[in-house]
Length: 196
Image (cartoon, rainbow, N blue to C red; front, top):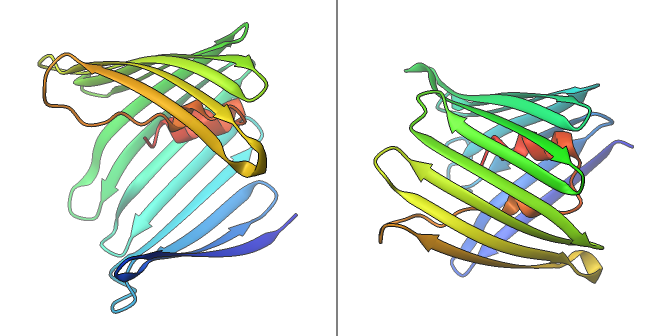
């Protein structure tokens, strides 16, 4: 069913972000504005389309910078690629991701084309709306993070997440655990995993 939705985010200082989204059967198109004083400078357009077993997502800003990603789903496995693009630099950083479900466990791996960063993870559904996951994120040069996470869907569209991160070095960025969403299908999970 086609639908148009709008969303406005407010912060203590006022307007933060506005989004308009159009959902069609197999496609979602979204426009986001992050500034009311100069809306074109903060404009970002994106589109996600699923055609059978293939998913494609693109994102672009006014400065002609963005990302292009594609994924392919076959049986219990999926793989995908994402690349950064810009008018000035052409094709930039490229990442690859793959995942496979074996029994109740979803295994995933992500790396860059230069193999200078990686992520391996396993997520297991342990009950109705509950997942437990473990991940290892690393970079060339030794920065490594091992993480354990638990997520549970609650009523009313709410959820709770608990993440424990053990950095090998003192300096690290927090790791994203949005891939622990228990309700996602395999094709949506891989396409979004590429963008984290």
